[in-house]
Length: 107
Image 1 (cartoon, rainbow, N blue to C red):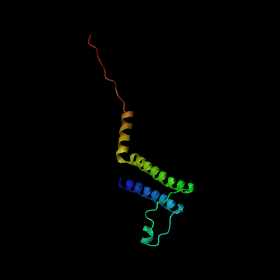
Image 2 (cartoon, rainbow, N blue to C red; image 1 turned 30 degrees about the horizontal axis):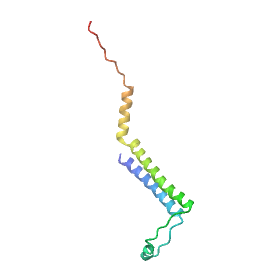
Image 3 (cartoon, rainbow, N blue to C red; image 1 turned 180 degrees about the vertical axis):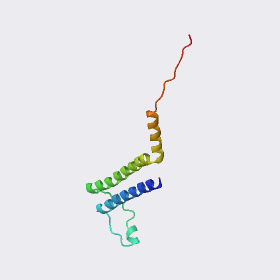
Image 4 (cartoon, helix red, strand yellow; image 1 turned 90 degrees about the horizontal axis):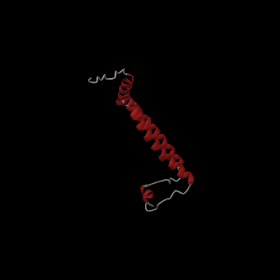
């Protein structure tokens, strides 16, 4: 059970890392920061993204994180020990042979 969760977490971490790397290197609006003074020099300036290419890359990053969250939830439900036990119990109940109760009417 521990190995299964560890594998799932490592897979999700690698996916999020790849998404982050792609979003960092494909957004050309980052400015080089040489010192802390240059970082905070224009702190009151608000930059608006106007390029459609930049917007598409940012949307891709956010939607991919949403997709990974959904994937994580699905993995948790499908690979969990409790889910497999419940599925096994349901299969046993469906395939179990049952007899209908016999009723007798008073005459």
